[in-house]
Length: 551
Ligand code: G6Q
Image (tube, rainbow, N blue to C red; front, side, top):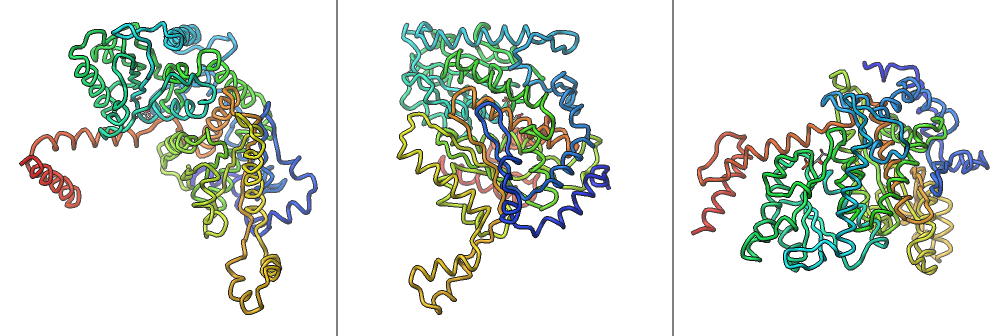
């Protein structure tokens, strides 16, 4: 048994689960008129309502005890102070330094990193503003109209999600595209209508060795050369963001166009760094600063608010409650703001790559479950698709609902229709529909008793399905920055409780390594026999098919 599952708080929670598992949230609301006030928190214009969860005072008390038992507050300080908490890579984890507004030095290897962060941010802004104001000229002295970010994983999802989310705040005559897939369709479809003389590429890769990105970058360079007939002026069309400056230079990117990343920023936490160059180009320097401000305010909230009033801490503890005691295997992220349509994909990486680990910080296999399967979709679209399972399926799927109080143009007719769904869904998931209520409804529809008897079982909804709601005024850069940082910190807290390192990603490294090995085997037509029969069979089938294509 691990010390976590033997801790007093864990054992008490396991016992408490048996007391609460059959209590319906309807009862919890009936017995506490102030439940909404008692179980909701605010940060600036963000309201976090967690009252529709299967918890009572005792649950919260025990979950907080669990957080205290693992010394969460001390870990929060270690995070902000730059201790090497990514112990498998001997690295600090300092995405918070990227949005730090204070001047107190943050020392890594004897040096204050803040001046370098600020200097690099200035370089990024300078380039972005030149592009936005059409001062940056391409090979034929034309302004840039299209920017293509080539990157994958952490060098793609964050910038892409934010650029989509803040589209109303962006320049609309400057298009920002994202290419991640090494499938040629992605880059070819993107380049089809672009003009190399007015296109700028950002090769975003911390390592500058990721195969997918490098193959796409090479294709982009060839496209430029093929279209123009030579490589004149190519330095005005290629930039890079990387911690491997040497490889970026070897690729041919001019030194002035290379922006730095540091090893203390994980890819999935890097949108605040120069990896966010595409974001700065889209929304401009001032609004990028607001995004950073919003994240900084969430950082301050996380660092200085008592655990019981701390939004990311409560988000994390609820996740642990369902994951480890209710045995919930998944969690749904359901934004009702169309501009957040890539937020579930972004969080999928942030959460699952961080907490999808089975070995603890001492190198032992854990005896409890860790990160959940994260999935999601725009809430309205989900309602017409997988919400059926949320309402009447056999699995418990705790869900986060995110919705704006105002949206961009805020046409009342649209917005009220949208929000009526938000409120109705959270209420229905909580309350469900009893047999009596279903009976009364069918009766009022004019069905006779025989018809009602047949249909009744299908019209009953058990309810008691947890949702937490995040309502925010409007999806502006500052609010988005806060929301992202709240989720980053939630993930951190869960990693601390589960005693895992949320900041390495050996599973991703494995994929990179395996693909490189097999790539060598695809370079000729010889059959392979070094794998299992399925992998051999698939590779050889592919090779045969390709060989006959060539004939
Ligand atoms: C993120 C991961 C991973 C990484 C990609 C791209 O935290 O490390 O998703 O971002 O594999 O790596 P490069 O930026 O090095 O190309």
